[in-house]
Length: 241
Image (cartoon, rainbow, N blue to C red; front, side, top):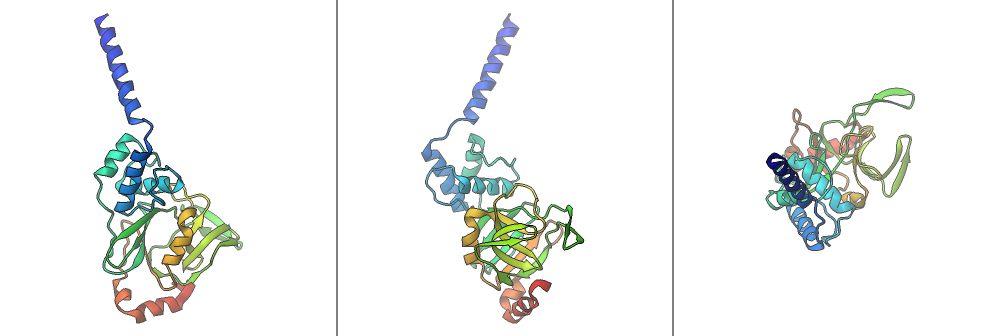
């Protein structure tokens, strides 16, 4: 009987702990999480205490950067992690550019004073597909690029419609898309959440340096930033980058 009582107490304790971790957050607590995420550089949208799509995407970006389980849910554990987190840092410093970390599946808009704004992305999934009658592989190229062309609003293509596309190599672009899964899912483009696509377009004019890398490949863009002629030569190559 004593053993049964102990078991019951343990079960009740575990249930109480789980319930505490899954509690409903007040608007003030949600606003605190948004404010801290925004201060760290994650793109939250309005800091208003509403757990909307933008806040969830910011939370996903945080979880990706920190290597945490990706849920997009605000829990007591996540709030505690947010409170004690430090800001993400770009690989290349000292100039304005964009970085896409393929391993973490995030994009960073980097300012010339090294501040970042972070969004979750979905890149090429590595699967074969057919385009224009030819076999292709859904691969996001790694390397150093510049935005060579842009479209505004919706653009319809053979592989689907994209929103505010910023082309960096061939038909590969950073663009808004209706779905941005937490894992690679595109044909090679870099999908970003719809709510941020127009602003990203404004912040990345033609000639913006874009670095796309993973854990085994990284090329700095600092030489292009210091020497406009080198960047212009890349821009003149257009889709052949």
